[in-house]
Image (cartoon, rainbow, N blue to C red; front, side, top):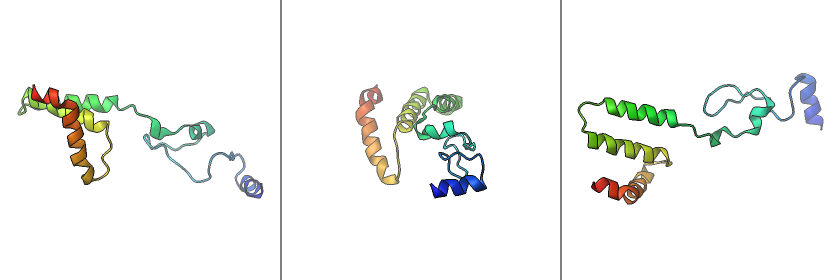
Length: 108
């Protein structure tokens, strides 16, 4: 392949699998350097447990909000973190899904 031989002549040691352009990991923002990193799709990673814990702790620190309100906020935040909202037009549909899915809990 002429393109590959030209690239390797100017950039010795560059593997064919990794583009010459510098790319960064979608979640960590660290440069992707090795061949192994290109075999995985970082968009599929979903380790946001720390974010849920921090959100819960921050809600618990509020003193001017009742316990029931805090539980509602936690339930809503957990729901919204599991859904994608691309535009404002998606919000009403997500609200309906939330009420349908958690209606019994909300009535208590």
